[in-house]
Image (cartoon, rainbow, N blue to C red):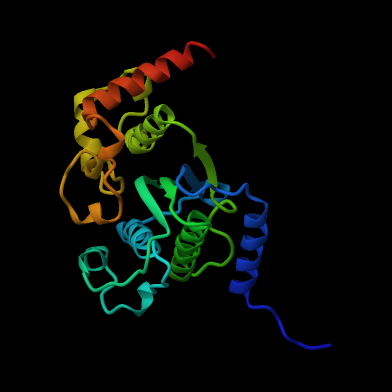
Length: 244
């Protein structure tokens, strides 16, 4: 019998492919809410460098060409986003919004080519797991299986999902904000200062991270203010909690 063993990385990719084969196909042109969390709800972002590595992967992985951050002389987020010569190839997805939290992440993506979202998520999650495991000198899964996704079927749901994702980090600053508690004005300031969400990009702030996401203004008659988003979200949570 041969002593040949399948490399750990390839075995992981094989398992990923088997699971993806059972996922309901995603339709080109449709939006999806994609998310995942750390295995056993563990933290997946420990430092600023971790968050920025994931953001860099969101950018470089969104293309048909493979870009290895490890091959770059300067792989910092600012250097990657400012590199006008970086060739990612044709995009795999349209990334609308994102928010990264200590133990999970949320994305809203549109499928722009067949299997684009699946390929994009595979590149991001595999790349980040390899980076994190090497840095932490650990082995095994970092994320709880393959990514989860929900189809965003209409404009009303699309806008609710966008607000949900962009306000997700509010719980870091005001755990009771859904109940209308706390200093809501101060909450708005903290939400905008949080560097690991595309909220400020959505609201029109010009920054390098805006290169990661697309402009969603065509989906709105007018981009809502942050105050309106918080108010409407609070009304939604209040209405639904009363039905429990």
